[in-house]
Image (cartoon, rainbow, N blue to C red; front, side, top):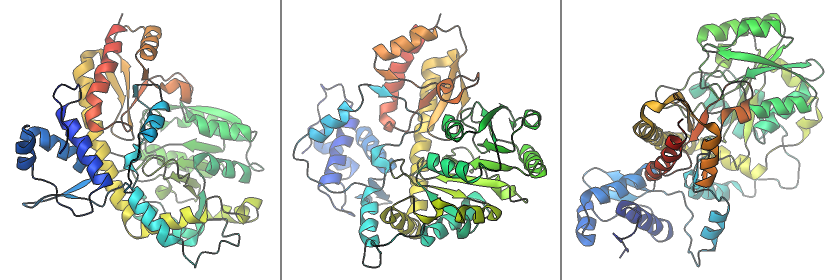
Length: 458
C-alpha cells in the first residue's frame, strides 16, 4: 500500500507517481502488469484523473508501456534495480545545488539516460575479444565509426564514410584537435557574434586571431565575413547558438562558395540537431558541400549524456593525411569500453529508439513550458527562440529592473542563465531551460519565476 496524504503540499498525482516509480525501479520486473486506473482509484479513494496523470508521466518518461485493451506494463526501464538502504544518496544529491529551481539550458534529467540497457550492453561488449593489452585505433573503433557514418548519412544528410570520422572526448576536445591540425595554414578564426564561448576560447588558446562576424536573420553575414581576414569559420547553421536562427539554404550556398573561393574551411557544429519539436531536423550544411570544405562536428552530449564525453568530427578527405601524420592519430581519445558499448547501442537500434523517446519527452516539456510562460507572464515578455534544444529564450517587453530581477532570483533560490554571459556581443536573453525538470514540476517552477519577474517590472 502507498501512503497518499491530502494534507501534504505535494499534489496527489505526484505522490502516486513517486510511489509507483519507486516500486518499478526497486521491485517490479519488465512486463509486469500494473493495477488498472479504476482499481487504483477505488483502492485509494482518489479520482481517475489523479491516477491517469501519474500513469501519463510514467509513460512519458518510459517507465511503463501501454497496450490497448490490456493496460499498463513495466517497460524495459532505465534504472538498475537496486535496494535503498538509507537516504544518503538523496541527501548528497540535494547538496549539489542550493537552488530550488535551476533553469540550466542544456540539461537532461538523470533518469533520461538508458542505464539498464547501457549496463547490459557494456557487459556484452566487455568480452575476451577485446585486447586490453594494446593501444587501439587512435581514430576510434571502426565499428563505432561505421555506425555513426550510417546514422549521419541517413538522418542528418551528411556525406561521409567511416574513414573520415574521428572519435573525440567531447566538443572542446574535437575543437582542440582541429585547432592543432590546421594551425600552420590558418591564423584567423571567424566565428558568429553572438556565438559559442567554448569555440572561441579553444582557438584563442591555440593562438588564433578571433574575427567576430555578426549574425542576422539569414545567419552569418556574408559581407562582414568577406571584410574579415578569416578563412576558417565556425557556424551553427541548423540552430544558431544562442539566437535559434536557422541559416537559409541560399545563405548556406553563398558561404560555401565564398569559402571555397578563398581555400578556406567551415566548421559546422550540429550540436542539438536531434531535438527539433516543430519540424523535421534541418539537414546539415555539410550535405550541400560539393567542394569538401566543411568539417562537421557532432556530439552525444545533448541527447544521450554529457558525462560520457563522446563527440566526433568528420574531416574532408583531403585533411585525413594531415591527421594521420599527427601525434594525435596514435592513441584513442575515448576508452575502448565506452566505444564498444556505444557501438552496440547504435547497432541494435537503441540509439534511434532513445532519440524518439527523448524527443517526445522534451517536446511535451517544451510545449507545456511555453504555455506556462505565456499564461503567467502574459504580454510582458516575448519569446526570442524556441522549438528546439532544451531551452526557450525570452526577454521582457516592458520597462524592467534587471538588477532587482537578478537579486530576487538569488534571494528566492532561482538559478538563471543569460545569453550575453556565454556568447558575447550585444544579444541578451534569459535562457530558460526545461530539460532538468519533470513535466509536473514546471508549473510550480514557472510560478516562482513569474513572481520575481512581475516584481521586477518598473
